[in-house]
Figure (cartoon, one colour):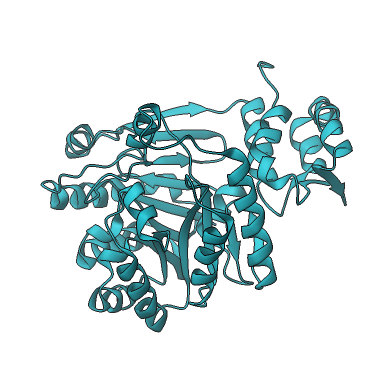
Length: 377
C-alpha cells in the first residue's frame, strides 16, 4: 500500500514560525491546480505496481482552494492510479476557511478526514503566531465539523513563550471538549529565516524555553492518555482506529509520491524532491518535465532513517530487522550506542524491539541521532 501527497503552495498570510514552501499570491492558483493534475498523470508509471490507500492534501493551506479544485485532483489520482475502496483522503484546513457550506461540500466530494490547524485556543498565541483565524472561528469550525466528519485531527503548539502549564492544560481540555479522535501537537521551534527567528534575535519575543516545552509535552502525554488516546508517534495521539494512515505510512517506510512544488517522494531506495519555486515548477510541468531531483539512499542512509522513524513510534526499532536487512555490524553498533540510554532508562528492549521509555520520548530525536552510523559508505 502506498500514498499520494499533494502540496498546495498557497497561504493567505505567513505564520511567524513557518518555513514550509508557499506563496501568499493566489494569481496562479488555477494554473497550479492544472499543473498538479498533470504531474499526477506524468508520474503514474512510478506506481503501476502499487495500490494507493491515502491521498493527503498538505501545504501551504489546501483549504484555500475551491472544493471543485480539490475534486479535480482527487479525480486525477483515481484516473491514473489503482486506489483502494474508501481510501483515507485528508485535507489540511484553516478554521477561517471552514464555513458550514464548505465543510458539507468537502464531505460530499470524497474527503473523509479533516486536519484543522487550530494551534491554540488563546487569542494572544494566535496573534504571536500571526495565524489567519481567531479563537471564535476555531471553536465555531470545530462545532460544525464534528457534525459532518467523524475523522478529525487538530494541530496544537506547545512551548509558546510565557505559556504557563495551566494555560497549556486549558488548551488541551478545550480540544478534548469537542470529542475529536486525533490530536497532533508540536513544540514551537525557531527555524532560520522565519519572522519568529528575527523577533527573538531582536528581543521582541523571549527565547524559547526547552524545559517549559518538556513540561508541556509530559502534561500533554499524561492528559491525553488519561482520556483514551494512544501516543503512537512522538507528536501524534489517536483513539483506537483513528491513527493517521498517511503519516503512519511515512514512519513505517511505505512508498509515497509527492506532487507539487517542494513535495518529497520515497520509493524504498530513492528519495526525490520537487523544486521549491512555483514559477519554475509550473514552467517545468508545462514542458512535460518533472522538476524533480533524486538521491539513491545508501545502506547507512536507510539504517539511519529507520532508527529515526522507528524510535518516534510505538512500533520501535526491530533488532531482527536491523540484523537481517543491514547486517551484524550494524546491530552490534546499535547495541553499543544504545547501552547508555538503556542504563539511564531512556530506552528499553522488549521482545527484541528497541523503544523509548516514557521519560525518553521527548528526547527521542536527539537519542536517535546518537544512534546514527556515519560515513560507512
